[in-house]
Image 1 (tube, rainbow, N blue to C red):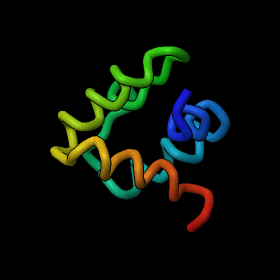
Image 2: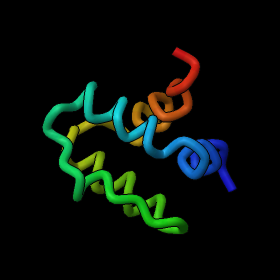
Image 3: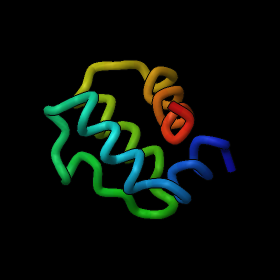
Image 4: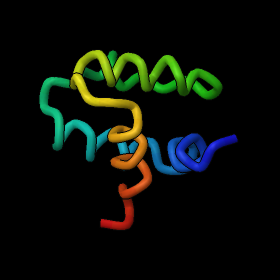
Length: 66
């Protein structure tokens, strides 16, 4: 299991709030998280914000340390 996946499982509400602040066009549907479907979550967010997966993962890993 990746470090990003572990971070999502433990802090999803905080991460979701940060993503909504940074990218106001994200909807609750875009940010709907189901355990075990992290790749689908990343895909939805990537399509909406037009950023690479690596950038999204870095943002998730930084959340809580900012």
